[in-house]
Amino acid sequence: MKTEKLVDLLEINDNNYDAVTDVLLNRFDIVGDIAFTDFNELLNFKNIENLSIVNFSLDDDFLFIIYKLRKLKHLQLINCDINFGIDLFNDLKISDLSLDNSYVDFNNINNKYNSVRLKNMNVDCSNIHTDILGINGSDIDINTINFDNIKTLEVSLNQFNNCTMFRNNYPVHIVVWDDVGESVVCEYEKN
Image (cartoon, rainbow, N blue to C red; front, top):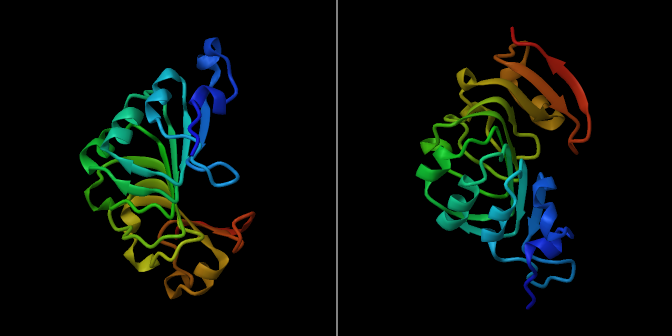
């Protein structure tokens, strides 16, 4: 097992911390060794706006650290085991949240987001407050969405075609992506 310092992984020198705005951390390197473990090092980077975390088990200590990243706007969690309390999560001032195979119970989250994107998961969406809810690539039941809490819904073509709710009735602006999520197929305005 090897553990590298974040400064070494990001390939920056000590006096260039302020230039770092985007960080992607994967627990494993390309051959499967543990590559990074100390989230406290993130506190050296005061200008992080976009943080992506992959393949970690996250607890309250992690949440407390990212809470201190005052410029953080976009948080992406991929294949993460989430074991933190919701109270501190509610205090995060992020605008965009992306979860891929990383479950968060939204029933106790009071935040209003610019966007929430959910992939490879099934979660109750009735209490998500966001301008844009992206569920393309997920198994979310569209009937669990509270359309009063969102302005735009992004779905896959397959989800759109299989949802009888959308037959000439669009409760919010609907954006339909191709099934691989690479391009927009069509859009429907709220009616």
